[in-house]
Structures are given as C-alpha cells and as structure tokens.
Image 1 (tube, rainbow, N blue to C red):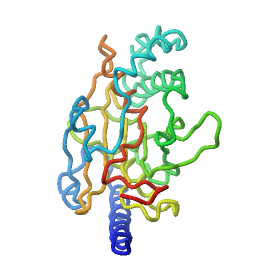
Image 2 (cartoon, rainbow, N blue to C red; image 1 turned 120 degrees about the vertical axis):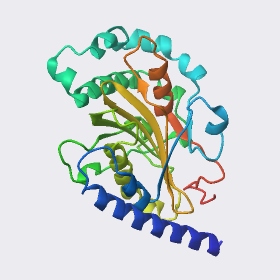
Image 3 (cartoon, rainbow, N blue to C red; image 1 turned 180 degrees about the vertical axis):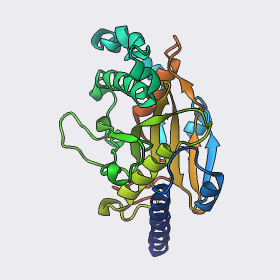
Length: 285
C-alpha cells in the first residue's frame, strides 16, 4: 500500500511540474496552430478517436461514460416540447448579422446557447446518480489572454448540481465546454483547446481533496467557427506522456441533428471507473 501511495505521489509531482511548465510556455504563444516542436517538447501525443466505437468507450482507455444515444432519444420529445430553440435553432445557425458572420467566437456562442438550452431541459433525476456527479473547473481565466485566442471556459453546472443535496465533487474527472475565437483551418489541436485543458489540470492538481489522485482526465466539448466543434479527452499517462484524443471536426450547420445529439450525449456523461480510474471515496485503483 505504501508503494502504491508513493507511486501516486511521484506521478502527481511529475504531472504538476509538467502542467506548470506547459501553462507558462502556452502564455508565450500568440495563435494557433501549435508548432510541432512545442508539442514534442511537452511530450504531447495527439490521436483521433471514433466517438461511435463502443469497444473504445467501454475500455480502460476512455475515462468517461456518455449516455447512450438510445437513452438520449428518450428525452427528445421532452426537449421538443419544452425547448423553444428546438423550433428556432436553425434560424440561430444562420449569420443574421455581419458581425456573427465574420466572428467565429460569436457563431460558437450561438451554438453554445443552443446546447445550454437543451441541457437544462433534460430531467436531472433521470440522469443523475452519485457517480455521475462531475465537476467543472474554476479560475480558468488566470491564463494570460492575447488577442482573444484563449477559450471561454464555462463550468458545467449539471456536473455538480444535485436536486436535493449541495454540490459535491466525488471524482477527479473534469468536464468542460469551451468556445474558441478561431476557425477550424488548421486540422489540428487549437491553442485555446490545449490552454483550457492545461488550466483545468492545474486547478485540479492544486486541490487538497485529490492529493492522493494520480489520474485526472478531462473531457471537453470544443466549439469554434464557423459553426463547428469536436470532442476531446486528455490525461497524463503513467509514462509522462500527455495524451490528447479528439474526434474529427463536426459540422453543426447541416440539417441532420446527429452531431448535436452525439455531443450532448458526451456532455451528459459520468466518470467511467475502470481499472485505471481512482475513486476518491474508496481510495482504490
């Protein structure tokens, strides 16, 4: 047991040092794309994953448990009745103002507003269990901003809210929605995406509540211009590699709602407590 605790402490110290250096170096960059030498220097591995791959999602390599699309479909009638944006969101996708047309952040904000409206319409009691309670990230804006290239990171309150009890954080997992003042013209990880993940990890590692935790995974729904987005998962591996898995870029301007439904199914997710995931309450691997 002592060896396990010592191993976790060493891993945590290594991650903390790596995240601190990553944040400092990110503040020196101005815009996407992130230079390849930068990724190599910080031992960042970027791979693509298929969000429909159930084998991957159930494996120990994925640390979140998205609600199944079949279960999500049960709530669609409720969303259609309650959420007025179900009728109007197509209009909101259109660039009705010149500012929105030329500003990727404004267009990502429109999409974010629709996501939030759909989320609040989903009955919490139908989704929430004790292990499904996650936490957002605080103090993300302590990163230095330059030319609006950093993300606007919103807490996912539905990861911490409970109908009858006060907010509580049971697991080290982090869930984020980020908006980026950028377009998908690089085909690679955006500067704002990496900055938001780095800040989230920094904040979580600094909390005494998780001082025995060596694994801190981050799930991000990233929204950017013109009206696109993707899903990312990031964590530090035992080898010290910073692993970033991301889906292909989704186009939310199409007439098909599949991309929106898929993203929402990941937003409404709980921690996947596999063999590598540490339960804070039990202290087990």
